[in-house]
Image (cartoon, rainbow, N blue to C red; front, side):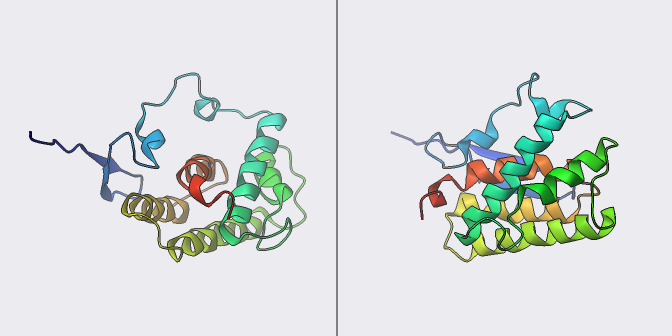
Length: 161
């Protein structure tokens, strides 16, 4: 009996290609599904409620990486929520947009590096490396939404540690 292996090539905005397993048992198989056209992330404008939800996703991703309390390592819903609100035209930022955006990107990159230190599987390692490239190449807060949500799904096994 011959086993066939499925390989998926992923091309990210940074222009790099990565190969990852597409087997259903893969912890990040969720990421290889075709995107749903009704997905809220594909819309142009976000509502205030969606900015809050994405702010929570940001906070959960940081807290999962560092296994820390809210407010440490940049794990604060408001940091990301206010950036997203500035993107849709409502500015509640206490710092200039560019400074806060740079800080948030730094927190996300540190969280990714922390996950990479935890001996991830090869699929997780490939995904996290590609996620890091996507975060580094992001030009605004809206560009960070998809990598954060995908990162939450890819790091499910670290949820309860």
